[in-house]
Image 1 (tube, rainbow, N blue to C red):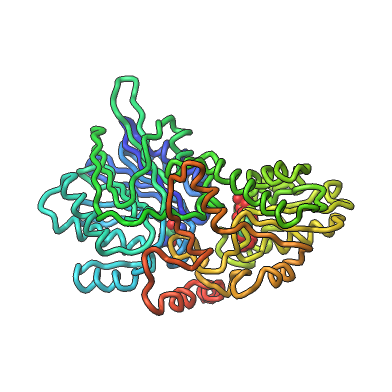
Image 2: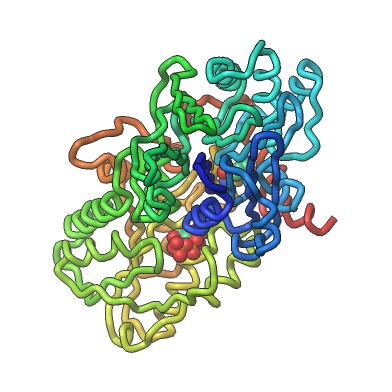
Length: 490
Ligand SMILES: O=P(O)(O)OC[C@H]1O[C@H](OP(=O)(O)OP(=O)(O)O)[C@H](O)[C@@H]1O
Ligand SMILES: NC(=O)CC[C@H](N)C(=O)O
Ligand SMILES: [Mg+2]
């Protein structure tokens, strides 16, 4: 999913960008990078691996500048290699570094346009490098470098690019630029803090947790289609750069991606997950008023909030029956199926006394490829459970996600083309229950019903940007696990 941060401060920002990235690490574990600008120079350091592995004292010292951006990557386009780690950089016009969370769905057409019409070279398979070149070209068509000209350039990007994008850039000679796609599919939040001397400092980030740990106050979310410019002197400019369109934030952020301590589009992720638990608990109660569940056990980490509420609604015990190895990262965002499958075992281990002789209800936030649940159900049986039920706080994932979550191939989705009974059989549990989509959407938008529409495409197959014919076949060819495996091998 990728995490992005941009900061303008009165001191060098690299150390703060680094700290910001460490709390966005759950959004991307494959690569990380920071770019800083100090007036005349842009400095970039990036590499493969976790944030803590990519930077050392020397690379941090070189990252001078009071304006900077940072990225941690979960690839959805191109390869996992260093070439496609972000931020990307172009030296014309002015020198621009860009970091992107999301995924473009018209990358091929844009790539051709960029080469043939804009006469710019894109050196990788990354959609983000294409996006940078579109922005650079649009800025190049402007007469001067001002917030106003940047807003016109972002208007140009919004006319040309389709898909999900939350973007941070440093533009030499101007400062920090950030923008969000016209549907607001990907998240972006704006924060501010004042120095003891009363000077303003600003941050934009994928999740508000980055603001919290760096002492910024959350001002608001960047609006769909809005762009933000912050100059090195701490002046903030904002403008709507696209005609109004349906706001459709990605619901999977609330289900799985985001940290529970983040606020996203003014909704607490933690509360959204608790409400998912209440709704699903009520459904279980409706379907099985005389249930025989002895204990509710979450599949850590992300399902905990929902699982606790299910236990409360059902009036049964909640127990931590699986212990998570804190040194293993998130398995879903690992690039290959072999690694994902191996990592579940390394990551989760049962405490048998919580299972022995009991009817257990295991709860996960979502079942995507079924990698986790298939193994966990077996672990619960091996640990002595009498019966193993499984509840998913999200509906069946039956369609690809194309806006920044790497699930391009329907064949890899355990629920694709299968009934719930068939999935239950495949996962090996005694009963399987899924959240209904209407309940999930209601749970996320909350009592105030702040958001009317979501991008719920992986659950209902409805894509807010529209899709070109042949698109799914093409990404399947490019990005299925099989395709990635043979690319790596060659
Ligand atoms: O059906 P699957 O393809 O296995 O994908 C779904 C699982 O993957 C995620 O866990 P992950 O280990 O990535 O992160 P977490 O520790 O935050 O739950 C998610 O929370 C589910 O447990
Ligand atoms: N998950 C993301 O946001 C990915 C960003 C971009 N499409 C990449 O692959 O690098
Ligand atoms: Mg999980």
